[in-house]
Image (cartoon, rainbow, N blue to C red; front, side, top):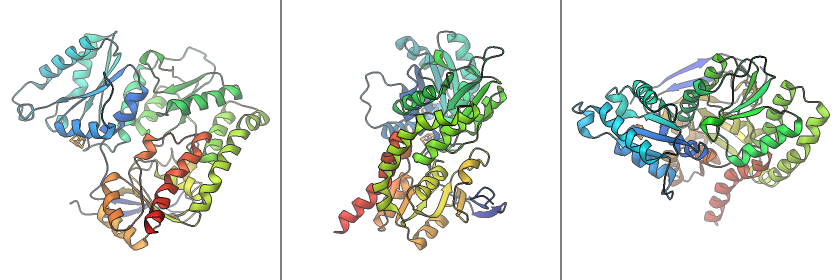
Amino acid sequence: MTPATDTLARAGSAGCTDAPIIQERGQREVFCGLTSIVWLHRKMQDAFFLVVGSRTCAHLLQSAAGVMIFAEPRFATAIMEERDLAGLADANEELDRVVARLLERRPDIRALFLVGSCPSEVIKLDLKRAAGRLDRAFAPRVRVFNYSGSGIETTFTEGEDAALAALVPQMPDEAPGAAPSLLVAGTLPDVVEDQFRRLFADMGIARVGFLPAPRLADLPSVGPSTRVLLAQPFLRDTARALEERGASLLSAPLPVGAEGTTRWLQTAATAFLVPRELFQNVTAAGAARAERALLRHRTALAGRRVFLFPDSQMEVPIARFLHRELGMELVEVGTPYLHRTHLAAELALLPEGTRIVEGQDVDRQLDRCRQAAPDLVVCGLGLANPLEAEGMTTKWSIELMFTPIQGYEQAGDLAELFTRPLARRQRLAV
Ligand code: SF4
């Protein structure tokens, strides 16, 4: 195990804007970036994700996605055998054969992602080059991209960041002198995307694009008139790639909970000069519904203590929601990575003095958790079972990625993710 090092970075003002972040480097317990294929493939309907990996990678995907019931799934693993790993076979030739067979059998595929894994990295298979070669062979019918989902390099939500960043060069240039447009970056469930589209349209924001788009041909344009609103907090590389294309980022809290959603929408409204009264007319009913839905959960959660382990990178927005809208006390807020600029609006809303930890040294964190004996622990699957066995109540953070949680209409469902385990524990105790 890697020895742990703790360093305190920066110090003190509004909420946790300049709060010290404890940084831990040690053993970590998180899924790799391949996991994000589970929600990406559902969203991108003409894409195919070909993991170049081992049987372990195939099993991870299969179990994360549940039993595949589609006749034609949109992901697969090109399994590297021991021969490949030992460098005895030409993995490139084999990969070209697999891709040619796949594209011949599946004429519906327009975007093919070659996804790197630990094994492909270990043998230094150059997937960037392979993607370039295959792209030249199959364009324009199929465009071939690559990114790494390897557990050596990525945690599970970073897989989405890497996939979206790979798509940015494919986005068309905006027309010269184009009117300002809004780009929402980050995968949202269709139902949530539709709700946001309606709200933006009602506010009079006409040009709105979403990344990823359902089809490659529908990728929105990007350029200096594009204003980007992040719908997920983990899009470091995607945001950078969009900025390099001239787009500017809007700083907002994430659209989770009634407050987060209103502030997120307000940021767009301000940037697009939406009159205050119109904004209020458009958002009032949804905000009121969300607040009503949160009321009964607040009764169950207020005053309860929650400990968040680093896993999904959703921890900071979720902690803000649990504290401000549901009255929970934050014992510790762990996150695999913390992008201060992207999370600036979130950090400002956390209560002063919140213990924020970036990175992980799992044993030390478990010790702190046991000592604090919180009412609820939000953590990855690997930690949940042992902690439950010790009598703690847990919530799997991966559910935050598989459940529609953003927006007004989902605020109650999001709160319920946290009341349910406590209610279950109570029933077991009776
Ligand atoms: S990419 Fe690495 S961590 Fe992920 S399933 Fe494959 S071997 Fe495991």
